[in-house]
Length: 150
Image (tube, rainbow, N blue to C red):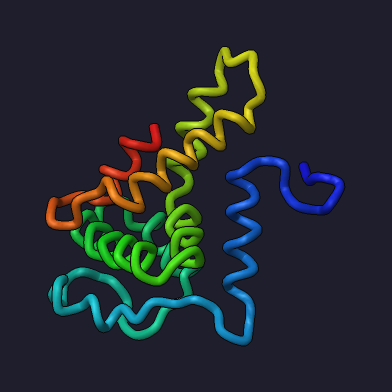
């Protein structure tokens, strides 16, 4: 559902719309996976070279057991969100589904209030963790983000 201005009503859907806009030419966001390869080794299965972020999101969804790859990718995404600003913060949220939507769905069950308020709270928790609560020196930064968001 969209608002009268054409922007999605749900905060999580708004992130998807903003992410899609960031992926448009002339300069779509991407990540050079070769820069991460040194941390992973040759047997990671992660493709090399520059990858568009939607393709990276799909690769992560298709490889749920690639925990070390997920950790290294998320460390980089979190670093960029902290250093390079809002576009990478939006990217981080856009890379997080379906987990954020799964948490939202659980919280919506039995909730009599506005579902979008819950979505906004989940998003707020995720962004706060992204900004300063996740310790990049510790393993599983993605899991730490999800724990705070839930």
